[in-house]
Image: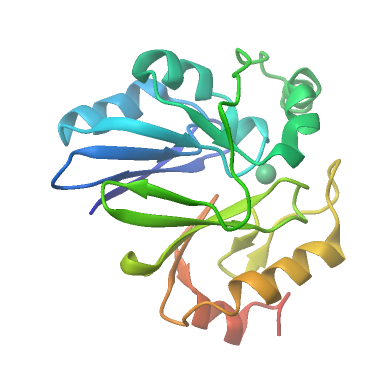
Amino acid sequence: MVHETLPVGMLQCNCSIFGDETTREAMVVDPGDEIDAILQVLAKHGLTVKSIVITHAHIDHIGGAQKLKLATGAPVYMNSADRELQRMMDVQAGWLGMRTPDAVEIDQPAKDGDKLLVGATEVHVLHTPGHTQGSICLWMPSENKLVAGDTLFRDSIGRTDLPGGDERQILRSIHEKLMTLPEETVVVPGHGPNTTIGREKRSNPFLV
Ligand SMILES: [Zn+2]
């Protein structure tokens, strides 16, 4: 499996590109910005985008989705509980003093328990509300990887002071849905460096 992580945009959101080495089919997670750079990585590996997945509707994660959708024709997946937040894109742009990105139409809901595919590799959708109501994580059991969005970071967890945030809920999501995964699972957070489930279980100050 090809996997490249690109920090994109003003807030350096980690955009993940997964590509199947046989079929050359790809999934792009959180194309927040810098779509030209993302397209370059796809071209370098000879990949065709089959799905665009949004872990949650914050502008730094979804901002470039429409541009990538237009460039690739791939459907966009997002959990329906973040639709309201998506409609507040102009408000979110105002928080950061940036221009409102082009709105993207969501093609498919990403519901808890859904299994998406990158080639033959399964990607399990885990609904982990708390940072936002529609936050999801993507678990790839055969790759030992978890794309965590802004739910879990190395030594931290997602903020819950923005609209739709809920601190008790994010802790419940992390304990029930993430800390139950194998300890060696590599966590690719929405911002900052990778970690593992085991490391966070032992030393994340918000969880111990
Ligand atoms: Zn966020």
